Length: 265
Image (cartoon, rainbow, N blue to C red):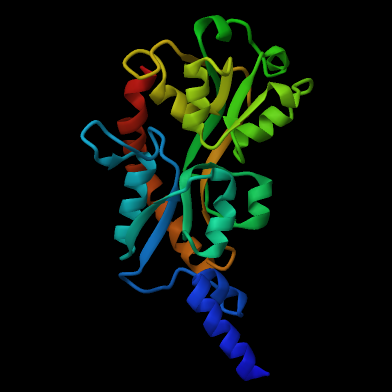
C-alpha cells in the first residue's frame, strides 16, 4: 500500500507540482535558505505595483518587497494575479508564496492565511465624475447609485454588499480595481469603490482619468498586510521583524512620501 501511495505522489508531482505534493503530506513553506526565489502575487495598479512611463516596474509595494527579500537573502519574482478573488487558492497551491499588493486585513482572510502586521493605513473611497460625486455624502446614500463597480473578492465588495438597499442589479463586479475604475471612465458604471491609495494616484489632473475624482463618504479605516500560508510561521516572524525595523528607521515613511505626498498636496 505504501508503495502505491508513493507512486501516486510521484505521479502527482509530475502532473501538478507543489500543490499536489502538499496533498501527499508535505507542507509548502518558504525555506530558510538564502537564494530561494520568493514568488510575490500582485495585481497591477498605481501606486502599489505598476510600470512607470519608462516601462520600469515600480511602486510602494514593489520597492518594499524587493528590499525585504534582498535584506533577508532571498531572490524574488513578481507573479501577476489575473483574478484577485483566487489569491488565497493561488497562495495555498504554491503558485505564489506571498500576497503583497495593498491587501486589506480582514477577519475572513485571517481565518484562511497568515497576515503580517500592518504596514500602511487605507480607506475605501468612491470615484466618479464631479456630478456623480456631488450626489453622495454617506455610505448609506450609495443605495441610490445607478451602478457601483468594485473588484471581486476585495474589501470594497464586502462593503458594497453590506450597504442596505443596494441590489445585485446595481453591482458591477470587476476582476481588478483598475478595471473597476475603467468602468467609470467608460461610462458603464456611475461610480466605483476602490482603495484611496489607488484613487489618489490614478484620478484627477495629470492622470489618464483627469475628469474623474474621488470622495470620502465615511467608510471605516483599513489596514494593509502581507499574506502568507498558515505553515509559514517562521518566515512571518522574520517579515514582521523587518516591518518593525523599517518603520523605526523611517524607511516606510520615506516610501510613503515618495509615492503619495505629491498626489495628496
